Image 1 (cartoon, one colour):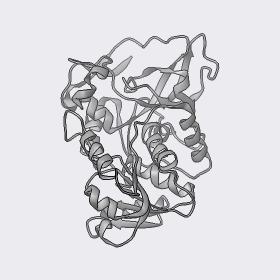
Image 2 (tube, rainbow, N blue to C red):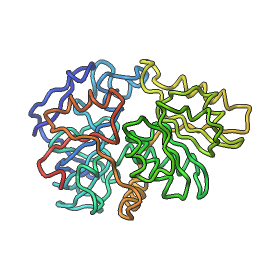
Image 3 (tube, rainbow, N blue to C red):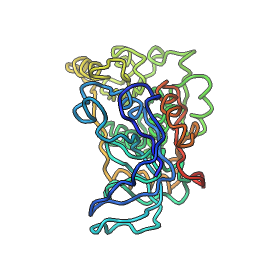
Image 4 (cartoon, one colour):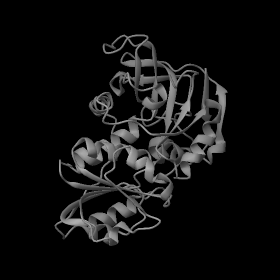
Length: 331
């Protein structure tokens, strides 16, 4: 099969299209014929071996799994002896796991990391959901505990996680404000944002408005500024910061956030998203109900995966970027 292979850490140029063997599957795994694979900032980071503190997980001198990509959508080709949820021909989407494997014609995926693809989505749209959708869901529903009538602000609302968070908060009955640049104002309105702040013209931390919950995806405002934009008992989830610090990524900012909020009535919550099947089922229900729709910036063929990862690494994608592996993924 054809796959995008990484032999060493570096820029996206280290990724090469090669012929390799199909992956083996265990008793509780599914062999997936990949139709499309979502691209995440984490894929860009792992290509570069970032952050360094995560190297024991991904591989010290080189990646343990040479095939990148976590978010996947496709058709079940074969199932392990212990698989009960799926059968060949099923259309599914989910996670390949932390070590990757989605940027290939076939992938081995654990049965409990997949759910049936929403009928209203194409494979490309479905491949955009798993990681960004799960982070948005966990941030807003679980950690933010957003409720109807609350005022929610999403900073960096036009990115992959942001577009899901806006829609999920709206589905919970919140009044949602999205912060973005001028070119994305109409996009946020189209997915249901009640208010849109153009950060090139307005600093949302200095308008005098207060929010019950802020999801910060970009870390372009100081923690003290963000606290000023919260209600007295408001909550912040700092999800941004990127990989500017090559050793610990955004870890330093998260520690500062914990200290900054330690002696005030406002709260800060941090978390690591985990691939749980029940979260994918919730996202599928929201999608089938028409409450959430993935936003796709652009697609790339499998052979251009390096360009897709380099683009995502720039940090300016509108919604999600997806690699199409087999023709017909948009159907």
